[in-house]
Length: 264
Image (cartoon, rainbow, N blue to C red; front, side, top):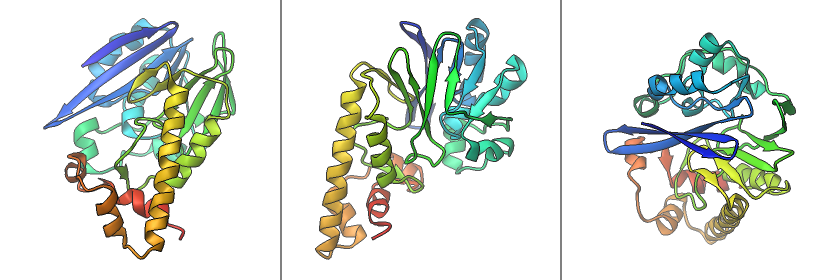
């Protein structure tokens, strides 16, 4: 299912995907002739009429995950517009998708596409955009800041103010640094690729930063008092969310603990 939500000149495309008992939402956005992310290939048939209706001059990918690059191949071949992504993901984008089966079942299998390196500053029809490297969720992750309107597009940097699970590949210390970085910019409104438009986005990003800082300090203190990773995980996160067994524990609270303690 796809819904269109208009926020002034930002067109938010809300996609909903259901597999088994799991229902997930993912957004991409069209603003001033720029398509930010391409959603999941599972929704391609519903996205094509939208892509054909709105003017799209170029595409920016916040990171290479398949729920953000899913229809990039179609956009490139059909609309013949350039696609920009972090330099480190250009080669990965050219290859056949290689990610866990549960993600293939939920998001589908994205096809290869050709991308160009994302510059430090982009110019759309009426606006200038600063691209901000924000690793943590993914090494190649980028946020976009609209200089004139003071809007921040955060990809998957936010998602939730109090995460209880992360993927094994994610890094809590890097998330903290990325949140600190974006909070140095002048903005209030945020567009998130999984929760959509957040009018109080700055406040929510600050809440997430405070939560992660407190969590990090708590984990380190408990570890220094002699608890194991498993014991810390059970103490801080006693409940197992459905995504953990569904993903074969690629998503797990334990990864939060190991991420914080990785270099200690």
